[in-house]
Image 1 (cartoon, rainbow, N blue to C red):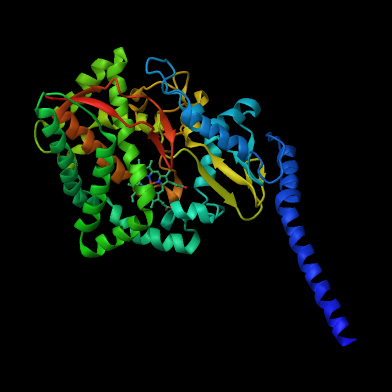
Image 2 (cartoon, rainbow, N blue to C red; image 1 turned 120 degrees about the horizontal axis):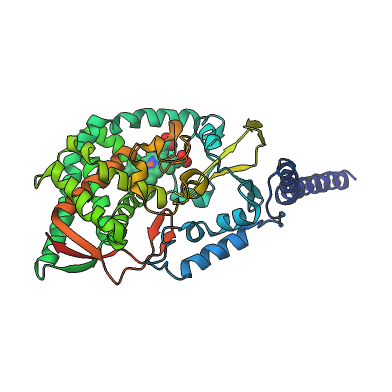
Length: 437
Ligand code: HEM
């Protein structure tokens, strides 16, 4: 008798546990997404109706795959820099159908598009409210360290790391970057010396160069700083190398584009090289003189605008809050589409997809139509990229040293096919023809 009642008790416990689990699953895959969808539609957001479990994922992945095998962009196309449909095909598609006030289903989680620079600013400057979503186990394989930390843990690490990236520390790192670049240039010189001309894919060289810079700067500093930087970099190595690599390619690519598009030819040949020789003559570049490279600076900014290596930032709020007029609930992702904002005609004018470094002539704040955050390749607010000055220094120095040593043209082997891996990359490499000068 007693055994029977114990069995009955246990089986009802199991039934309750299973029912509870089923309820949770049902809530996760259906009830919650549908509630959030209603909530977002009531606030004027539009998007596809939620589809069980996968949401928009199937279409999103199919479009991404399609864009990887799609035809490269023709270099003589007037829309050559209009790479948003290629890099963010699904976001572009949804925006075309539903407009900027739209949402996308990342599985059962809705992600709203925040393309208004004022709102982007509000989000980036309130990291205690708008946090990074917790990385799932797959994302953790690629992202770890400070980028993913929150609260006290982030604050502590950022406080330790900040001094390592101060101006005088960058100056200490400058010789290491110089030597890494010098090594790459020496290899190119050997190749070019035979016929005063050599065709090569510079992409693998850049990868080696950036990796070399990392190890030199990490180990080349004082023990304590070196340890801190190295720890940071060790945690970051994937995103670090990838993102910094792509700070060069756009600059180079853009210089090449300058040469390709008639009216910019003189600009590239005279202004940039002229500036480099004016500032450094034929001498070894000096750290303090990098600030005088105004044209190079404008070109890098324009390259970072059109080809922003990081394409989207994502945030979420773990409590109910307001963003302007929008009510935000936990479970909603906020998607800040850097690349789309950088190409938006509303903020950058009719020539938004054109390469025009002169828009940065009066600095970043005056480059766009509004001086809110419509240019944010390095993020913004307290969590702005800690390595931005380091990346810009490395890019400026490398460009200057290359221009001091070579003239170059685009190889016929080059195909313009920017693609999105972790960051934006040239899918088939970066083929140039180098000449000694
Ligand atoms: C062109 C090169 C680079 C670009 C475009 C870039 C872009 C970014 C962006 C957009 C963020 C903000 C992420 C967010 O708010 O969710 C970020 C954060 C970060 N970046 Fe970079 N980055 C570059 C180079 C570097 C370099 C050279 C380092 C050197 C270590 C670095 C280290 C970091 C770190 C540690 C963070 C996290 C900062 C924090 O959360 O407080 N990045 N980067």
